Length: 431
Image (tube, rainbow, N blue to C red; front, side, top):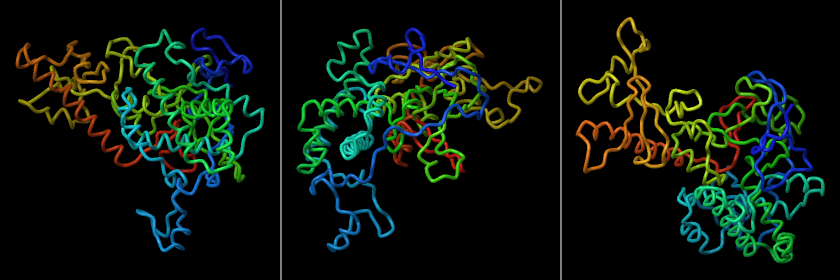
């Protein structure tokens, strides 16, 4: 069982008392063991593929069958592959230039990711217009968190500059989606009618902000699951479908404990998919771009200290540039590949340093629990040659993280809150 709490006061909040611009979390009211089902839920709304009638002919690539009948073939397609409407959307001229010109922190992320996010918002808007949900569903839907569409910096006076920049980016992308929708909507379509009405247009803006912050893969938005916050060290995971063999089971998602969860503990999942295993700068960049927030979980805010809550990103540990066994410039291979590397009897000790997180090499440092040393970048004008060489380890780490990001993006990915991974009957999905 679960309950919604106000993150600022830790007070339990009833559904009717929820404020859409306030931060809440989903908390366990009973203990769960690893693998236990916490809740099962069907989505309030889902982005539909059957919305071609909402767009004018110039805004859609013809379906493969129509293209073949006209003696044409889609670039990059074949007879056995049918592109979804997401890839069939033709964005208005100058849209890419508007995205490229973004100067916010999140706008510096990959162009492909932001274009994909924009297409998803347009599809969510057209799906809502084509088949509007019931009043009960609308009430639950518009209670979900979304930043204010009026004056984000005024409403977030106490927020950091980074937080306000991510909110500003969400608003700019939402406005761009509405502008694209007006140009792409078919004449007299439900989408066109909504965008021409001022009140309905404001409602669509809220819908897109809710989609941007809360949607799972496929544009699925849930009443309870969408309230589960992110952590780079999650204690729960979302799996697709239930154990039922019914045809409707695939429309449900199941929240399961990824480890033991105590009563009163907040339930957190990862929004990152495969990027969960990347370093701090990559994770922050993906979250700012796709979900418009700055992560401050224990893995992102730790500085490599001795206290458990300050351990930091242990997954990003590197051999300490000060005390890790080396032969000249190279790591000691006997230590690197010895399964019993921490065997005190043989006098072998592997020493790792944990990075204190920063977005650039100059903002980062390495702290080793073995030698208690701290390594940081040394400016060109000062420091010994040894200190400069030790600091190069941080630069090499950042260069490696950039290469990892490039490789991951080149293999494809989703900017949605939920990404599929693994396999089997219970394919793990992450919001």
